[in-house]
Image (cartoon, rainbow, N blue to C red; front, side, top):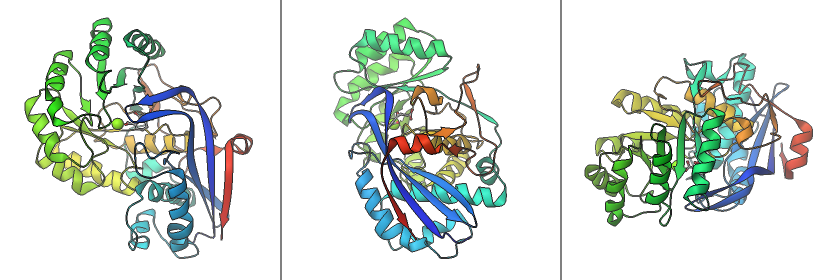
Length: 368
Ligand code: OSB
Ligand code: MG
């Protein structure tokens, strides 16, 4: 295919609830959409960079800059036969995985449409529905967290992840465990701790958590390995795993026993699949993380999670957990067994709704 035109859309969407983590708060989520055109068709990608460099150093503005000035000119009007070739086209450039991943997703979408195949088929995924859970942001106090968790359990989510931070950790996690002794519960610290906090993590061992996600600094596999050796609960890495090599090294030194795979964080779906393949070979279970995506990124997450190594429930909740309305159709619904169906129409399998898109658009740029 030859990409003839690319649009960048900076959008801003109101979340149903403020999402609070150890690194910040989000109510009006901003992100970039990438729309590519070829042979009379179009494809969409979602770049999950946010307004603030909280989860990643990238922001909506840095992603806009590197996409417009470097990444897009490197592929516009040049032959590209498969999305995985994007890596070669961008090899002169360092970093900016979230920006890369947004562009690559659009290539997967249009590539699938040109081939008449859904992403699940292109990836070799087997599952037609995937187990999912919900990620619950930090709440005012343990009672409020218990109430929020209760709402999501009521809706049918079979796995709950709660965010923790210093000052809101053991007390809130043990309160949720006391109230719901049998649920599948995990916590995510988003790098808020140091190895000197090991006593806290030893205490968390008593709560029968399925895992503790990213407790320590993102650039510190060694300390994660030291912590894992001291506790029984499996560690799961998110921010620390930026490519397949990191995954292999983290597994080799037992810095974690589980990996959260996010296509944005690792520079695209191609690298995400490579990490999945590595973990499957090593017998390390993975799950698909989330970045509060619109229906576009959510569709890609579902396709990724259809691969066989994604044995644990992902942070892929139903559309109505995040946005009402969303900018794409069909909306994703939770099945009664806490799964969501993987789209099966060509490409991502979703249609962007022009009026909804218009309503949330901050600015647009067209590159030809
Ligand atoms: O650490 O997994 C995370 C959202 C934004 C940034 C980082 C994270 C998250 C989530 C939400 O936990 C997952 C989702 O429901 O999309
Ligand atoms: Mg995380």
